[in-house]
Length: 348
Image (spheres, rainbow, N blue to C red):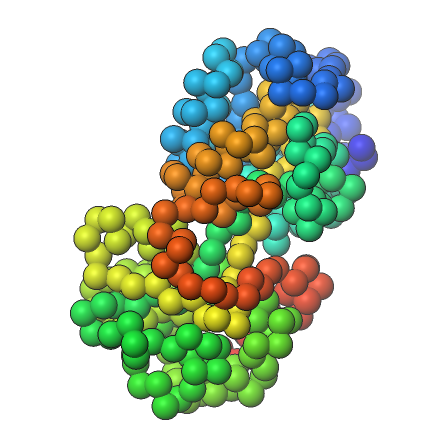
């Protein structure tokens, strides 16, 4: 697959190839057409390891340990990296002769950008025929084994559960006097994705945004993590957006937190894997991705990461039954998201 690059990158890459001074092998590893995990393992174990780039790979340590136990001889190595740093790393590796990593593991809003740059190769996970098309990227350039729930977190010392809204209309009502916080909606991340999904689903509109920004006047924090910390310490009473996994880990550590999913819209963020084009260990990478859709993989992400598996009948994470019934809302796509991000920048 040809990749789109800046003219400078293409020139530098051409120079590297001419001088044979860059890294990378003379020929790409052969990609198997194995149709089962067992067959794939036989060729994957010859590659010995996998390198994954993503923003929260440290949280997946126990998941990857279970994969390694299931497939001895294959080591999963990870690098926590995202945003501009990840962009620069990938571009630099291309200049040097090819990607060093095998997989990207990141939200769909980012994976779409890398697919548009033709960084990814097509792959349909083995033994995942029952996966719904909604969790497969265009041309199978990525796949989504799990989703992370984002909703509202509140301080149980200052707010009773009965007083916390359960609809978006109530959440943005200026009459609800709780001191709220939110991670900066004008900077790409979880908060604007949640709000874009809510706009796309019709559970909020521009007037809701005006009321929320101008009348509720939440305190704006630089990140989801700092907004959550403010709730934990009592600086604010609630935060508009918090990840379920983070909430569960904080709660287990003794933080006075409750979690409220709006009945008319709980944001389910797709967490995708994309195989890098020209991956140095393509068969091992494909084995890991395929295993994530297996019964064992789906159970592992629910247990260790508190994410919701996408395969039919996947087990739910701990505490999910206490969240109540809610309508899932999802990422609306790059075109809508970029438009809404600009709107949010104007409002906040």
